[in-house]
Image 1 (tube, rainbow, N blue to C red):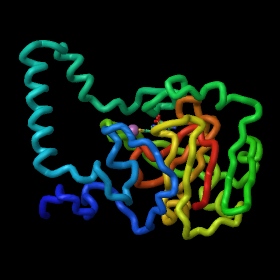
Image 2 (image 1 turned 45 degrees about the vertical axis):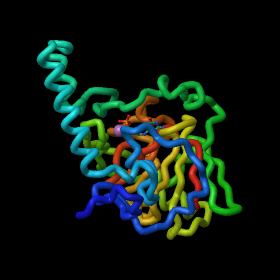
Image 3 (image 1 turned 180 degrees about the horizontal axis):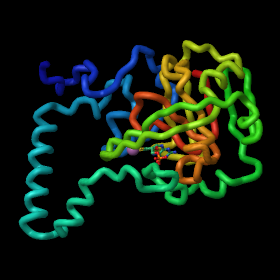
Amino acid sequence: MTDSSAGDPTPDPDVATHDQPDDGAVPRDPPPPRYAAFARPDEPGPSRGVSRRAVLLSAVGAAGLAGLAFAGQSVSFLRWISFLAPRSGHGPQGVPVNRTAAAAGVVTMAHAPDYRLTVVAGRTTRVLSLDDLRRLPQHTSELPIACVEGWSAQATWSGVRVRDLVELVDGDPDRDVRFTSLERGLYGVSTLPANFARNTSSLVALELHGQTLTTDHGYPCRLITPNRPGVLQTKWLSRIEVL
Ligand SMILES: Nc1nc2c(c(=O)[nH]1)N[C@H]1C(S)=C(S)[C@@H](COP(=O)(O)O)O[C@H]1N2
Ligand SMILES: [Mo]
């Protein structure tokens, strides 16, 4: 592979891509650097122009920092080890939590009696309460959450199929679907390519391991789909739009 730093829009092969063009209609703030590569997988941009040399240099830098940490005893040996260890298994319902509901500022909205999930395709809108969601056909998927921070946890999720919700509003199954959280800001939105939206395993999950989702795992409902990085498994959903 050749160096792609000079404005070459060739997608980075390390980043998941798909064949649906993005109309780019929704301007958004750039995501934080740690998740930048996942935010707009289908669009070349400044974050895509990272050369292999830059990656190599930052790896060398990180290795240097690690060496310094040891040499200077600036972190204790045990803390250093636990920093490197996968966090799998900790957190409510046996699944780690990346960002708590309190940190995201959504606790009150998530538990509000007037909570609704809005599902939109063109001019058709359905506004669903949590009970409405529970009355729709429920399905179960065994799917991992895989966070780029270095942990992965297998889990059993139950809820409503994404494709059933698309059908509920007469949405075109060949369109991408945008998921918006009660949480405003950087992690509060993700776009699911049409082929993932059609996948029967893709759920708007209401339950984890047979229990109502905890607030930290995305109550009242969250997206869970196969083969997507954790950062795109949006929690605390408020709106679903067939694009
Ligand atoms: N709204 C929202 N959804 C989110 C996040 C977030 O910060 N806000 N974090 C994401 C990341 S980075 C991961 S790895 C998963 C973790 O899900 P969990 O906390 O239920 O394990 O949620 C994703 N969904
Ligand atoms: Mo993550």
